[in-house]
Length: 207
Image (tube, rainbow, N blue to C red; front, side, top):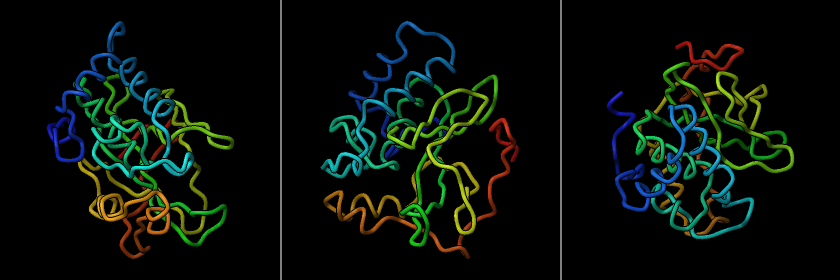
């Protein structure tokens, strides 16, 4: 679990602003599930999704997302991982491959999180931000993500990453406006993708 608690360049949970916010979110509640829910709801509801709000600047580091109050799904997942780790809760990054529009192509990666809860093990959550047609919740062990994965080319990408994928970092650091990011959303080709993650109906990771 050490890697999923680590402070890193983009999940920089030792930043003073992040440590203060993590402590604030944990105040008055006990247990990893209650703390994780507080962190999830803060990122989902209080950090604006960059494209939904057409809001600059483009953020990548967790501390940047918190400071500016905005981020793409990837950046919001960096912040949620950082807040969880700052509270001693193991957290990682997950990805889906989804159609950019209602029906693909084109496709792009979508970023979300996995949190390790003592009672349930690894549990995926998606704090990208709700809107009409999107209603993600934190209700373990039931998984309620922002988007369903539909055939033919959409996928849950297997694995829980301790650090962001390089192509995600490139998209968020090499483009200077939310519009530029949207025009260059990260993607992986079918041949490069792992097999889909094996999740049961309760949303519990089975390996």
